[in-house]
Length: 149
Image 1 (cartoon, helix red, strand yellow):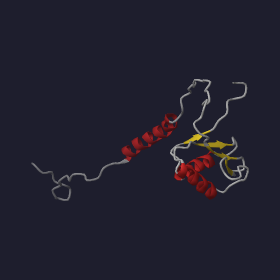
Image 2 (cartoon, helix red, strand yellow):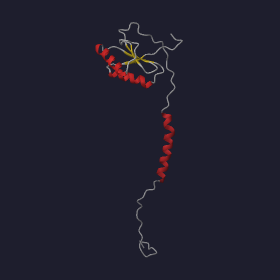
Image 3 (cartoon, one colour):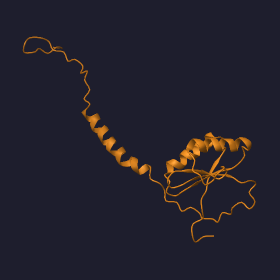
Image 4 (spheres, helix red, strand yellow):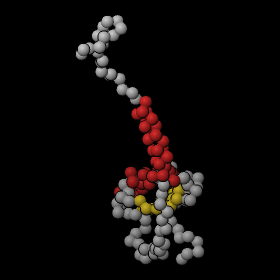
């Protein structure tokens, strides 16, 4: 008897199941999510590196006076080669003045002298303005730590 008879007298045939049980896949996905959430912060931690300290000597005979842009603690801009180096400038005035200086001498060095209390974003903003004004490279001025040199 190849077919089995049902109580109703009909032949029954098994149909293939077209549904997939996704519950085990959801469990695996949640476990992977927890693993990635725990391990992701560990991947971005820095490595403790002891950098070498050297006594850097300033240039003995600089070829020419650099353009120095100073940013004080209140975020005001000053230019050492302006008509009045003690007068604060707006960002637009600073860009125009530096562009005029660099038009005459594009190889002139440009340095940023930022107060230690100035937010980092303000210093980066000044550096971008100087680059847009035509500075090929912009350096940051620092001082040697007290007790050294």
